[in-house]
Image (tube, rainbow, N blue to C red; front, side, top):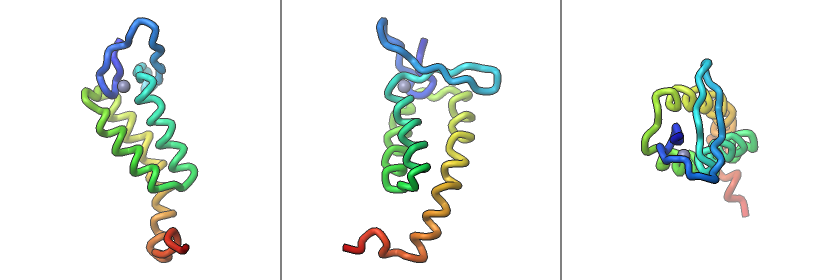
Length: 101
Ligand SMILES: [Zn+2]
C-alpha cells in the first residue's frame, strides 16, 4: 500500500488513513493525513497564515499524487478557500488588523 499523496510505502506497523472518494478508496500516510486535517482546521479557524503555511508543506509532500488524490484535493480545498476568502476581503479593508500592537 502506498500513500496517495506522497507515494510513500506503508511500513509494517504504520497505520494509513483510508479516505473514500467517488466509490474509490485512497490511502494517506499519517503525515499527509495530519496536514489535511491541519489545513481544514486552519480554514475553519480563519487562520489564513497557518493555512498558507500548511498548504505549502502539504504541496511539498505531494511527490507522487494519484489522479484520484488531485481530484479529491481540489474538492476538499474549494470550500476551505471560500471560507478564507471572506477573511481576506476583511483584511483588505482592514490591512492593519493583525499588526495592531
Ligand atoms: Zn503521505
